[in-house]
Structures are given as structure tokens and as C-alpha cells.
Image 1 (cartoon, helix red, strand yellow):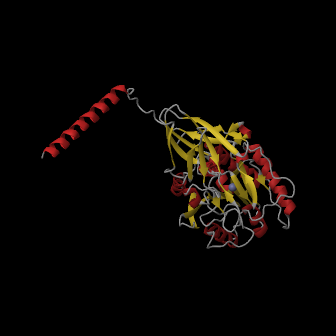
Image 2 (cartoon, protein in one colour; image 1 turned 45 degrees about the vertical axis):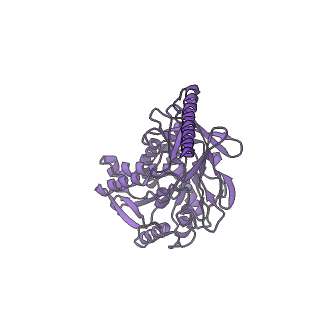
Image 3 (tube, protein in one colour; image 1 turned 30 degrees about the horizontal axis):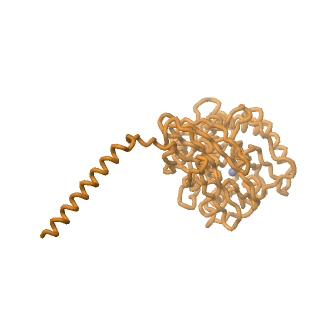
Length: 417
Ligand SMILES: [Zn+2]
């Protein structure tokens, strides 16, 4: 018992000493201050059409955003360039972002997308967007410094996003219109329905087909489609006149799976929807194109071959790609395309021009449909950074304006044929 009493007393003394020591330490420590919130709390990719990525803070304080590559099946080709995410951080904080993985491979050749990534779009609310320039650094590096808005949330995108939900609203509008018909021609690899919007009755003297968004990052092309469809659905006399002259068939989002996944270029089987049109489509790997090929061949069999087919894309130049496969009547085709370009220059903000020389990009829809079906087909790139004809950065409003101006272009093109 005496021994135990001694132990208890020692323990009590030790405890008392520890308490005293901690009180003294507290009294000597500086008063606690609130930890300031980090400039960038996190990057959120849990939003519709967000790009897959990961990020880290570099020693220089800049955030390196590692875009994940899309890879092409059985090919060295890879692509990263779709950018869409939401940042949460301290209001007023400057945030520098550097985009990584811009060394893409196209057509088997190394090439960086950094050279054409000259702008990005910003939005505090995900609805109203402003396009700003990026900074190009040596070594294919792109940076942009942004200021977090008052709400502490900032959306950043390559261009103003056009998501599946935007398309769903457009398709619903077309379904509700007396001037349009929506036909599901097939489905994507993941089973998403592919709709062609037909505006006009289908028995007008001329037919135009347009497709957009074979490449998921190219949202500008979808905004052009939206402008075109909405203009043609109008109840005004001009729209009625156009609908009497030509039927317009629109496939506004060819690569729906890619858009849903925030991808850059390929379908989920790793196939490029703007390639391999020089041969029959592989249904198993590319059901998106197989559905379109069936539709087209049905149209041709029914005596309704399109008179003009335009495949819309975005890139850093915005040229018309006038391909030259060895087909009869190539010179006449090129003459018609030159006239189309002249009308575009006259009736829209288009100023960019066309590919020069013996250009050929076989397997694109433009080249393949011309070669296999004798259709006046072309790839129409749209500059992703700048609308030179308006001396402005790109915007959804300018894309839609371009689409809304296309019916007048078709009217003149067909009238003068
Ligand atoms: Zn493209």
C-alpha cells in the first residue's frame, strides 16, 4: 500500500506539471489567427461536359492542369484540347493555370495544339461567357491568369460550352415546330440517339446537309447549327421563302458520347468520325457514321441526294477545306466551292479563305462524300479563337449569327447554279 500511495502521488504531480507547462506554453504562444482560404480551393470537373483532367500546384504557384489525352485506336494519334471546368477559390485571388499535354499527334505526325490555343472563355455563372487571350510560353506551353470573381466560382472553357442539354432543348424545339421533323437515324456506341433535324417538307428543289461536332471539343460548330436551325424555324416571310427553296438536314452533334465525356476528338471506340469516309463504314466500331451512311444511301436511293454537304469543325485557322480526290468533274466542283466561298464572304462574317494547292485530306466527310457519292461536300473549319470578320474574339452569339446567316447563303448559291 505505501508503495502504491507513492506512485499515485508521483502521477498526480506529473499531471499537474504537464497542465502547468501547457498553460505556460499557451500564454507564450502568439494569438491564433484565422487560416486564410487558399487562392484555389479546388477544380471541379463534376459538371456537364467537363474535361477529364488532374492538376497540381507548381513551385512557382501556377496550377498545372493535365488534360487527359483521347487516343485513337490502332494509331499513334492522340488529342487533348477540350477544356471545361469550374474553379472554386478566394474572391479576388489571381490564379495562374498552365495547360499540360498539348503535344498532340494528328495523322501520325507530332504536332502541338498550343499554337492554336490562343483564347479561352470565362464565366462566373456558367451562362454568360467572356473570351480572353492566353499567354504562349516557350516549349508549347499555354498559361492564363484569371481573377476569381466575387462569388468565388469561375468556369473556364476552351470556347463557350454546348452540352447535350443544350442540344436536347434544340431538338425539343424542332419537334414542337410545324416546320421541322426530327428523325432518329441510329445511336452512338453508348446508345445515345442520333437525331437528324429536317427543316422543310423534304420535297423542295434543293437539299443541304450539315453535320457538326464530330470532334467533341469543337462547341463553336454546334452553336452555328443552333443559329441555323432557329433561324429556319422562324415564322417570318423570309424563313418561309427559304423553306420553300431548299430542305436543310442537320446532324448537330455527331459525337454525343465524346461530348458527354468531355472528350476531345474520338468516339469511345477510339475512332475519328471525320476519317475513313473513303470506304464503307465499320458498324461495330463507328455506329455514329454507319447510321449516317445508311441515312445518306437511303436518301440517294430515294432520289434525294444532298446537293451540298458541309461538315463543320473548329480549329486555329478557320479555312474551307476543299479536297481534291480524283473524281470526274473536279474542276466544276471546285468552281462551285469558289462561288460558295464568295457568297459566304458577302453574306456572313466569313473572311478566312480556303486550303490552297493540291490539298487532300482523304477520309474526311468532305473528301469521302465527294469521292464516293459525287456530292459537293466540304469541311468548313471555324476559327476557334477569333472572328476576324468582326474583329472580335469568338462567342456563342457570333457563332449563332453565322448559322442564322447561312440560309441566305444557300438561297443565293442555289439560285445562281
Ligand atoms: Zn474537328
